[in-house]
Length: 469
Figure 1 (spheres, helix red, strand yellow):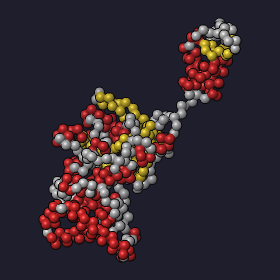
Figure 2 (cartoon, one colour; figure 1 turned 90 degrees about the vertical axis):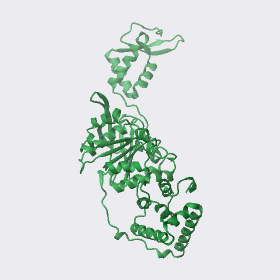
Figure 3 (cartoon, helix red, strand yellow; figure 1 turned 180 degrees about the vertical axis):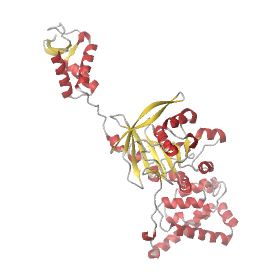
Figure 4 (cartoon, helix red, strand yellow; figure 1 turned 60 degrees about the vertical axis):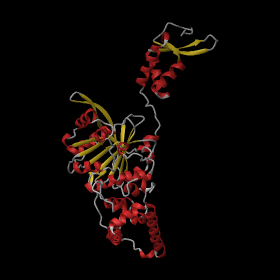
């Protein structure tokens, strides 16, 4: 623990979640200290504390023999409680937490010593005896059931508008280029919204996408705070009750930052693990999928606003951004723990109206093999224009100049800067205008006695003189 127990209620749920976020080894997880915390189960707890221990064990990869280890841990802890009595056990710890922690650490160290002295006393579990389990999918290959997935997006790329397509798919079975195969079954969606207003934004957007409004439930951070005077956070009892009552197929948390406990630093791996552990346990308990949304930063795992650890926690990671050259939006499947990542979807946003209210819809365009890193590293290249576009630009620049003329080198520089065309395209366009007689060029003597080529719009009467600009 990072804080003395006297600073908080001994055995509080928040203490327990924070403590689990700090453990890294099997010995630390299945310790006497952890059992004492788990023994403090109270009606207001979000989940059974034993469920949280099991979820943390799975997160750390302790799958083999987990049932046996859980039973042994619970049995050993119960034996100690029966030996001294629950009240005596709890009061002894509450009165002198530091002493108990020292005792627990000493017991853990003795256990480590025994392992080091007899390394062959532990038999690895045989993978042959582990049953193979199918992965359930909310969206085949994209969003697994019972797990947490992640959507990271650059500002202004329409993550909420794409989410509307996802919600339409889940609630109404609406297919599209994004989701071409109908779902095995539809379900409800619970949205925890920290940014979008249900009446001003969400309802029109979801209606335009074709979602079934009777199967969409919304909890906003602002409304919850106005009603209770407290922020709504993922580890809270209220959060779990919302999920339990709604029984959704999909939980959307947008953005994640709006529902983290105060004091949680997103750059802290331990704190983020502890904050998201209850969400993982809720998904496993109710068999639903969770999609958390975040804003993005630079590139790769570091794109996720201060905490690359969230990338590791999520079983599926999606990233949205904008192609620098085509200006199309993209949705890239960057990580998939249970299947091959899907190909990147290209899309654009179109305006729409619902009952006179302006909104927007995401429209699927195509798919590409490019990933988020490819788009991020790609340089912006102006698309070369056709010679007809370039020819029109030459005429426009000359028409806007005084006397309809200018030095040919200056004309060339201005048109190429404006159009982003190649030398070849400019030369061909300029040559065709000369042949058609729409422009002419003349070699004009300058005041310093040197000659310079000028381009003229139409066949100007000026000859042999320097145009006065």
